[in-house]
Image (tube, rainbow, N blue to C red; front, side, top):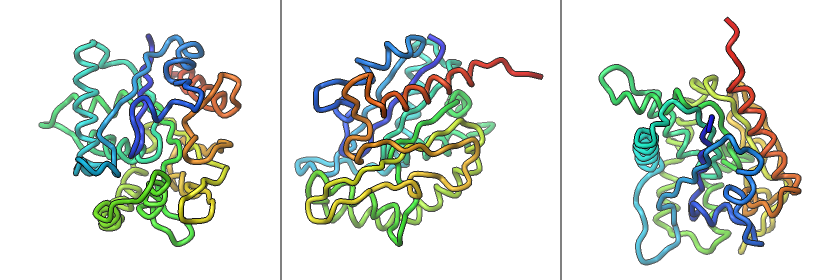
Length: 262
């Protein structure tokens, strides 16, 4: 194995179900290994539910990010793969968690945990898929997330208040991330089709403008002919959207493995 591919789901997601199509095809397991046999493929799961009424996690995206780093660093140490390059596939809120993780890792200098900084250094490529990095048409990124959550039912008012209260934090993250974006090869995938909402007209939830980090270096936007709910659900290897994602990863790996010219 020459590279690790790590997938991070969004809120109300699951490390398997988020990536599974209606026909039961889990492309991270059933398709991707055939097309990229030189990669170890991992799917990270965290308690991202926002509409369970029995017990909800009160962790913020920042706290999720720190746990994510700790677990992934531990896994890479145990498997002796700490030096292996990583490519991340981050869907929706998973992209926000990943950005917090990279900012946190880049903030570790002398006197801090060395393994955390290695997390950033090993990160070579990122596919953000349907992540609302910024608002659009007078709607904040936090309000976009609220719309996304309403696809699966009513949004808890506490969650809504939390998102609105942290809207400024998301804006700060957006500005801070640009300063480290040149370290990674980045592709921003956005949905082209509208999503059906229970109490609103169909609309594109994360349009191109919102799905891109303005000023990001070494980055390019790409559209997928999907609605937000099906952005990371691919039914077959012949799916044009799947092919676009796979070819992007293959080109990233080639770029990563290119010998550095002095």
